[in-house]
Image (cartoon, one colour):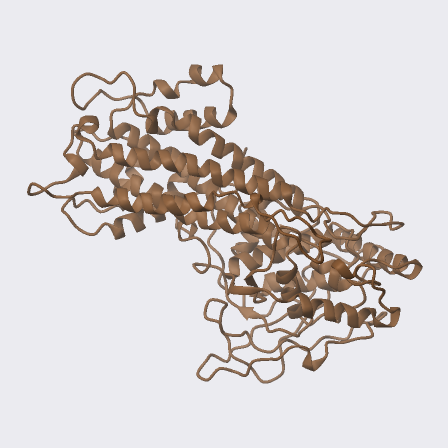
Length: 598
């Protein structure tokens, strides 16, 4: 049960293979964070070429949904074979109707990685040049502008249509690396964090053309198309977070072979004029892909954005769940809590792997038991925040593992409708894009995280009680009436309220669309966004507990000699006077990934 941040097998590699078979959620995160570059093995690209050629043969022998027909309620409306390329362009343009905030670079890069890998699994029938362009964008540090709202867990149609228009040159690329922007502040790169790599900086420069594919395939499939920087007048530079544009797209290079009949019409999408006073640097860009019949729906038929967001949320919450072991151990020591509730014998009798792991981690991080301290005799039982921690935290660990498994399955299998069979003889129309397994797993993780976060808030409250700690109320010092850490209970419960809102099951949603043909939706897209919001909320709750636990332990004559206390005490301010504690909570949030790696 190795986590993505606990020294994964390829942690020191600078490449992640996109082969349609073996991409892990950890690999998605590394590509999203620009900690690695994508590499496409030749056999994977050859697989995509075979699927493309098979789709062409099948379309010649009979009508395919979305290529020779309309989509949705227009599924029975025929499209003339001479109009299929234009039909695909209209499909991309009409479906690029997302709204809301432009998503952070990190989330969009995760989407690009997932979609490229899915296409390399074979089955989409898409032109392989789209795969090349997606991976080039990852290497070059550019990404399309994608709006937040549009998906319902039955395909990220708007996000992928916006991406498609960018890939063919009708929308501008955005430039910017994901480091420090769009990432949860709890998961920002930390120096010295075990198992993490800081994102690189050199993503905007020119790279070796064709390096995305290891070698020319044996069956004559050409290597990856190269690219060159734009030669036209530069446009404004900037990143997604500033709203600036990355400049005009590169001119397409000539490609031999059966060229598409259509190129993007100049009037298909308006280009914004350069903004006055903005930077003028133009990064290297992927060459625009010339769309061919069948490409549009093949690109759209995926939950790639939702899967990318789910991979990020799963990774970030996993880091916090592991950090919770250290924070809970510190709080347990601060109240002279008993380790009886964490005994191996207790959990062997109820063999839930998550609970057993949580108990074992707290035992390990607590170090050897010290002499009792506090008021009066040793307590018979601790409050639930301490005594029931393994039972509440264990399900969250298991939910994270379950989500990780589902993401790994989904990013490595074709979801396109229609699906081209591996032998190229059949096109299957199906509902594999309906993301119920993903949505339910995301909802389960959010609910499980809420359970353990509620106990974190309970432990925080317990640390301010003199009857449990033998210390002044709210760990206050100074004149009578000093407040100490009182306000952190409010801060933690405010964040807990946000987490509670995120845990409302998105899967309970319902929608009837496209003249009743699509009469349900999984709402996995909403579940993924809720999970991403849950990261910061949970980190805040946990950081508040950490600040108070360290303050309580500093008041002890003999603080614990554990790695967790050493790390936290070295980072957190030592002053105990009444003062704003915002900076303390911020610092505590920043060291959670360090505690997760202990």
